[in-house]
Amino acid sequence: MQVLMKKNKRNGRGISYKVRVAEVNRIYDEHRRSGLSNVEIWRRYIYPKFFISERTFYNILNASAVIDTEKVQREMEQWLPFTD
Image (cartoon, rainbow, N blue to C red; front, side, top):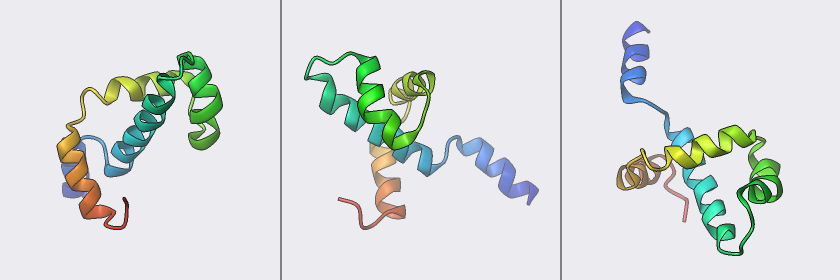
């Protein structure tokens, strides 16, 4: 049990977090072009689906710059083989 916990801490965030980051960013990018403010995008589209605070929303937007998208895509394909 100790070995697994240390391994997970070394690897950082889990795949579910990365999937959530990717989905929030996809929704944000989709509606950003329409001229809505970040607060409106969070209020209309993000909060009803994910129930996250506005601060968490901004943290997720910042996290996307840190996460390697190619690596995330490979992990998503491995763990979620039926996603499009």
